[in-house]
Length: 580
Image 1 (cartoon, rainbow, N blue to C red):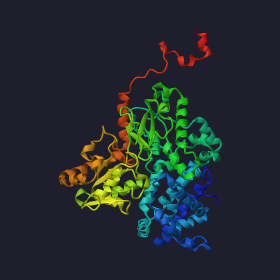
Image 2: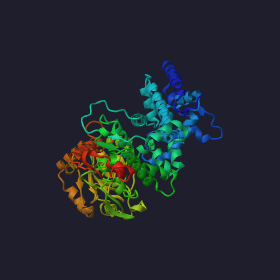
Image 3: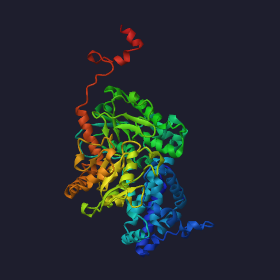
Image 4: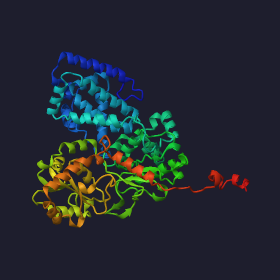
């Protein structure tokens, strides 16, 4: 039988699907017991020999991961564990059918958890084949009349079936190339820089040697090639905006293939993703990978055609998904020219090593929210209680000087613990179980700065329906021309983050607090990257770009002459001498 991961054409897939449908239909007609699908005993499928611990493999090593809580690009090693077991347990048709029959949601957990690692090590085509297998298993099983009972029994045993379905939908939406929207284009036109043609040709000619992992380990000259399509691993964690905005701009109905028609140019910007992957893989011991990739990207854009220089870059869009970008990128200012930055904050700063360096120009740049993973969004929304049912006045739990050495200089977090801990209605401290549930029970949630001014606590609070209190004096919040921040949040001086803040909060009219809570829920969609419709970070960015287009200053170029003479081609050439 063909191995599960056997190449681009995936010749095993049609045969597998046909056999799977037959298998499932047989079980439907035989009305076998529900437990057949949720027994989850590996020794019933393979000989575990001298490894008795594997007898409880599904419950000990897989079940707790059925929540699909992948929240960082650094989870790559965990994905490799699942990838290895996916190989073992799906190595032939008989084995695959046996494990699906024995532990269907365990199999789905293995396959879905393995996807990012497969994409990174084996390529996008094999990852798509694995996704199709997962989709088919779920779809065919869900046709059984007894499937609701199977799901209920699995959930009673601790399998998080709804999380598996949510992950499947996430991969369905973001792993394949995006489909361009069918609605008419009614705004500015966008050109998304494609992979360099030479790289595309090499991908066709050298299939086995152009995998992301292979290229990253082959040397810095291959970084742009490695990140051409954006590894799936880039989707997770606070920096997932690099992947999501690339996907979003490619799907717009206003995307154009001819750059001469474009009002804006989107530049794929995986500068933080490559750092996160290097943290795990250590392919660049000098830790210059982000700077190298940045300059390779700018060089490619510059050489692509006249478009970057035509308006001094003022129509080009880069993403800086980390608070210390772009400053951590060597010599970034001059190459960036007048380009637009989508960035998470207005200053580069590190309290442990670097003073604040302004990087934000409000006339051209756009502050964007940090990314919160889809599974976390669902968790936060699940615990979002009505205002009348909230019984905690104020909460904050996270990193501080007492549990994270690098936060020893973040004095506002120290002050919060020293002055607020133990007060009535207050819950503050380090990491705790049930954190999302606590946020859903809290009226106010503190969002103090970290090592850099921005903080993901701000967006986590709003998605839980909690009124955020921003404790970061220099932080620039997103979308100020769209969102009425004072109607649902407080921005409070850091120096007064203790008893003075508490006294103010207990003095507030409950009716005002209830109205602010209502406004939080009303505006949370602007900060949720998985929100659909007219209210989302993407739509806020598009609206902001339309405003930038209206006020874009004129730039006549570096050289000019009457009648549009092609002076750049003449200057410094022998042709110029002939014209004298």
